[in-house]
Amino acid sequence: MEQHRREGEQDAGSAGYGYGEQSGMLGEPAHAEMRQQGQQAPPHEPSTTGPRQGVHRSSGVGGGDNVTATPPTGWNYVDSIATRELLPTRKVPPARGWRRVIYNATFGLINPGQSPDELHHAELVTKIRTPLRGHYKIGVLGKGGVGKTTVAASVGSIFARLRHEDRVVAIDADASFGKLGSRVDPDAPGSYWDLAADEHLDTFADLRTQVGNNADGLFVLPGGSATAQRRVLDPVIYREATARLDRHFTISIIDCGATVDSPVTLEVLRDVDALIVVSSPWVDGASAAAQTMEWLATLGMLDLLHRTVVVLNDSDGHADKRTRTILAQQFANQGQVVIEVPFDLHLRPGGVIDVRHEMNPKTRRRFYEIAAAIAEHFSDTAQRPREQRFRRGGTGSRGSSVS
Image (cartoon, rainbow, N blue to C red; front, side, top):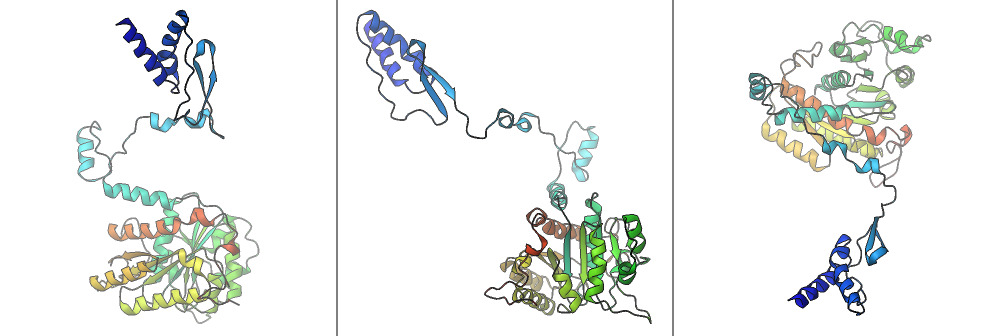
């Protein structure tokens, strides 16, 4: 029996070779007894599997193996300890619905957590607050009557409300009596010409006298008013005025005119980082939006199209669901982000847009989605030189040069 036990230990010792501490515990006793009987211990057979990667082995006292872990290059102890995984997870208390009722009724002892709708809203807010370096310009295009100005004012208000450390300005670049000022601040004091002529705008307090603002903190530079002394906006005035705004504002929302190839709109397109193309949920409006995007592609602005969001805006409440679905799918098949904005009675009459209190929650959620889709590109483009952010005047299979 003793002999069988020793033979078993010898077999276990040889089987344990190459697996760290097991080789010292299982292999050494059998070899020691063989030396006491004057027999020579058999040499260790090399392991077929070999030592594991990242482990260094050296011969130690008593015939065992000393194991020393070899950390990979660039490794350090601080980074290897995931402190977040060690801390207990805490659910954010729900803000509304039956979950909030249970949370309040149990004095916080039962926390069902946020609903899927609240989690989605929190995700959108996080995207909208994506860090941004430098300044970012967003152009809004669309034919007349599709709600282009409404979209510009609403998206700008959301950015201004959620990005407290950034100043956001909405700019009316519609040379045909644009209405952006009336949707943000009807009493906005300045204009392009006042801003371009004032040479003493050294601080933001000085600039503040030339722009209006709404309750969400969105500033606005209105276009020309419908007066007898109407002045026509041209690219030179636009460039001079916006250059002054760029010194103080991080995000600019530019409401362009209905004529996409007008001189002012072309000047806007030379300097934007992203686009929102607004369309009605009808065939004629979608056709105009598709022509606009095809025109941008022929100008070589293919990279800019990758940062373009298509908005199907139901501005009159008569959209056909089937047509709207087909149009959305057709734009999505071209790789565009498509967001449908439902009809909202608050937006129909005109006047100042109140995103927070008067806008329908479903409509507000859609505008959050638009802002989040735009903000997803903040981290991708903010660190590149502005002239390299899209192919302006590039040549491609569909493109031609821009003069």
